[in-house]
Length: 187
Ligand SMILES: Nc1ncnc2c1ncn2[C@@H]1O[C@H](COP(=O)(O)OP(=O)(O)OP(=O)(O)O)[C@@H](O)[C@H]1O
Ligand SMILES: [Mg+2]
Image (cartoon, rainbow, N blue to C red; front, side):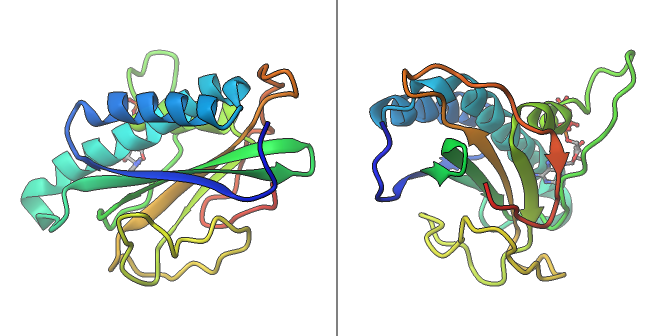
């Protein structure tokens, strides 16, 4: 079971099609190692969607803005929320556009990623960092209420908080589905 001290793991991945797979793998290994196997399923989905979105955005923007850093940085951290352990997933990329949660119609093939994240996470959002984001994202505070700068000079961080599972390592009921893009709420 998760200890009182903060558990953190991070990775920097080249922005390629294989990045989401590596991110999923790291998420499972990390959460299992932390004694939070019940968080694996939802965390995998969230990590996958956020990293895929970053890879796609970097690819799409490559010719227009040529990001200096075609990588995705992501971080997992575990802590104790009011209802038990929670896992925060954060993904950073250098793209100066925010994620936009869509409401895809039945016939639409895309636009479901954040819709799904919102359905399974306790909360999610994004913000513009106000300084360079280091490889380990150390300064990026996984805290609620972070002030969002209205500039995209340093890229952006998209984050989601997921339930850490019950005491027996099983998944617990899924999140509230709230969208608080740009802000953080206490888990
Ligand atoms: N990291 C990002 N950088 C820039 N724009 C993003 C980022 N993540 C998401 N977006 C924007 O938000 C939109 C919605 O993302 P979402 O994941 O819901 O759908 P999608 O990626 O278009 O399709 P799907 O996830 O179903 O394959 C994207 O189409 C994109 O315009
Ligand atoms: Mg997507």
